[in-house]
Image (tube, rainbow, N blue to C red):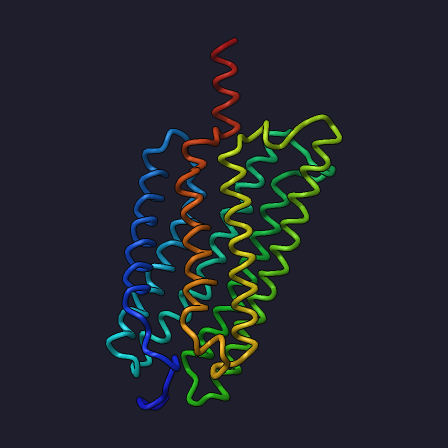
Length: 269
């Protein structure tokens, strides 16, 4: 697109960009350290590290854009990274849920527990693919019509992810209800820190996706797209909480894997 194109409708703020880059960069390092040195080994948390590094790259792109607002490259980096990164947080939630289900027995609703995370990961990959195609279209756009077309494809991917999240929340509530009918409280199986991590991150992704759907529906010249504080309040803040809650209440500290639990029981016997 032309160098004179106004991509943002404002000059991207430096304080928010610096904070986002530093904060998510720090969480990336913390997540990797927890995977390596944590009491319990959960290597699936690499998805959370990918989400954090994607957010760091996105806000780094906005920091670059603060100095070069007419440059297409930082615009493309920030929009693609910030749009796609939450998919990896959802993936972490799906796997965590299934690790919790494994602690309740081999089967839930007469379906193997692994089916759930495999199914949701496949849905996540589809969502990621749609959003990536939208990102490619945005990156190759030559005018606002093409830009809006790319954003519509991105929005379709986010709507698909949003629908997956709604289905996931319904499954979590159904699981809690089914266990309660058997006299089992989900909280007693996992402990409150793990539940806070899963529910907190899921709700934050839900809020963020709702905002992005509304933003992209308004087009590239819409009010939400052209007002930065919405991005900070309804994208950066939810993602900061979603990743942060996983670090503070890390499964590497609070969730003993099923195989390690059985090994401990054998040693006691």
